[in-house]
Length: 325
Image 1 (cartoon, rainbow, N blue to C red):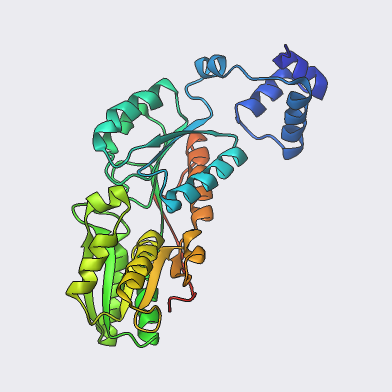
Image 2: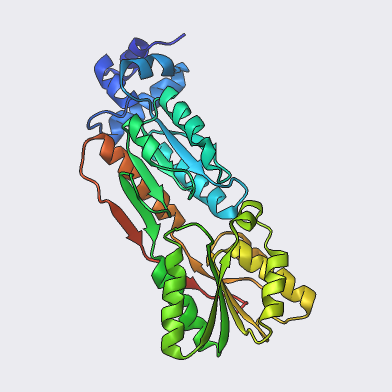
């Protein structure tokens, strides 16, 4: 079995240099890093993760907590976080909270026992105060910062403004804003603020509908959407807080004989794969998910080097026009 000394001999580098590459510590040139990884592959060298974790305060593992694994937004986010983690020589330890805050103690213990180098929190219900005990960077994505190190989010308010302006351009006068969850405060609530702001300016009748958190847990909004449309028969435009909701609006409208976009215009949010797979395809507000994932991982890497990091990073969104408008 190959050892660290074997890798050093193969690369003609010192053992300490090879160790710094494996532990992602200090400045290492890309050429040196690639040389070490090539030698490890050639020699089939497997680092002893347990020994490495005992020799330092943390491992090269980042804990990621999401509320859903089956939601396309979080699936896309996790995929991009994994790509970014590889770039920064981290591995992911994934937790699925299913928005049950009682799991936080379990997550806390697992993060402690695995000596994570940082935590990325995407769940809205899991508390952050207990994670301070681990004393590692805590980065939040699309949730309020509270006790964390830094937050990464998209410009939700501007997204709401864009959606309202586009529906106005399409001639909508009676619109519904299905964004935000009851009993939960999130940065996404700003979508409704931006949407209402433009609707008021344009003289558009806007009805804001808060989503029941129980529906968010199941991701099945169809009965709820059907009742909303029954209660508001004059609706000619809908802004949905996710492409998942928008896709189910299409299903309900097809069932009720409402033609999209002829009778009703529809805009989603996120721009995940489902937005381009429905018929009609969904006009949506695109979150820069790839960039958000990369920044979150870079913040952990910088914080672990004791570098200053911004407490809040907000990235711009864009309007992607498709067939529902």
